[in-house]
Image (cartoon, rainbow, N blue to C red; front, side):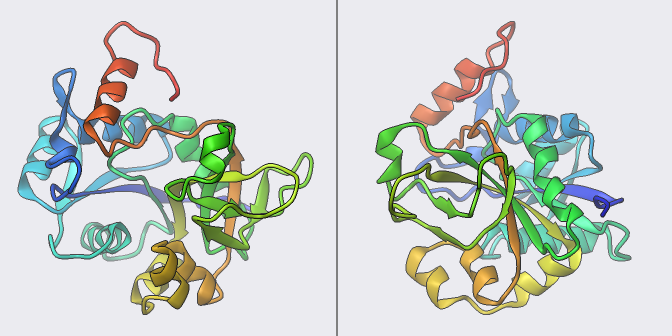
Length: 254
């Protein structure tokens, strides 16, 4: 079993956001947030990093920093659609056999987590890989905004097959619950298949895109990690990110 030989990281980003308008361009110590995400992805060192931008100002910001960006249709409904559109435009010949989808609102993400997302693809039967961490805060166990990955992590097991993802408190009974981290590594063929699938019944019910893949019989494996990266969705989150990335201060985990 071997990892992908030619992975690429693609970061989807667009300006439309309800709670934090123009979020990718939010200033964090003199640089737009999307540039901080791009830098974290570059630090991972797994391959080229491409921003799939829904708006020209995002392309301009990334290119000013020395990065690569592709302008995609602003009406694409989901980040995975934007990733696939950018990948086809950037690599029409299919040289890159796996793609890591890193969300554009994770300016403090550790490079090690991006690398870790690729590891489950060492198993040839896996179509999609993702991450989860043990829930520590009791209030997160019942918070529907904290998506739970249901996977059989026995003692000492750090990669397990996803059986389900849910906003409910699951599974029941004694034992840990796992906070799903929305970072995915797709085999290229799996991403192509995924974006062509119709929306699933459970996907609509839970508003969780990954359930479409499970309904279609695709295999998702989950790698267990120790930290949950800070996702910036509100002005308060942005303040936390600015504090964590303050110049001269060691980078912190949320």
